[in-house]
Image 1: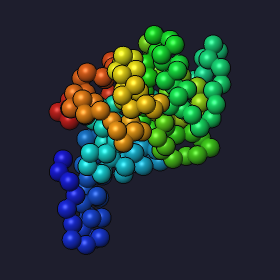
Image 2: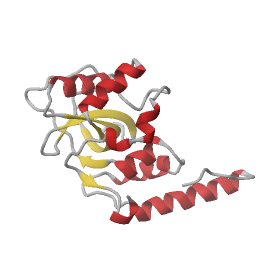
Image 3: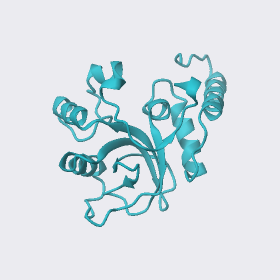
Image 4: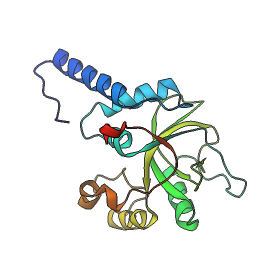
Length: 186
């Protein structure tokens, strides 16, 4: 979609409202994903080219996280590191970055977690994650991006490598989860 162009704040608000409505029509709220989280994600995605828009168009959604018995609690506030380390140490797990929500916070926050081969969310950072929407990243691409940017995670760096934006097929991982876009939306 093209960038927002406006002459006064009312024009901007009208364009944002139209984009939210277009996203609401194109992307069905997955079962189990909290409504407040979903609406906030749609609002974030109204900004053209935003990470939230990438999550909707290229990502998947999940509800309810689990912490597998073999995964011990990781330090709070370090989700990108926690999920990256878990994915790199366990080849059967896939790193996912996007937006998550907890029962305590109730809003969409930039977050990272892993998904097992059955599409089950394992969140080493949050005990009570309720809704998730994000893009799964191939492990080799995760390693390369972290080396290129010298930071944990993928999408938090302002120095994101150009190839990530230009060729999503080179880093998107196939995982089980709720499809978001209608067939014609992708």
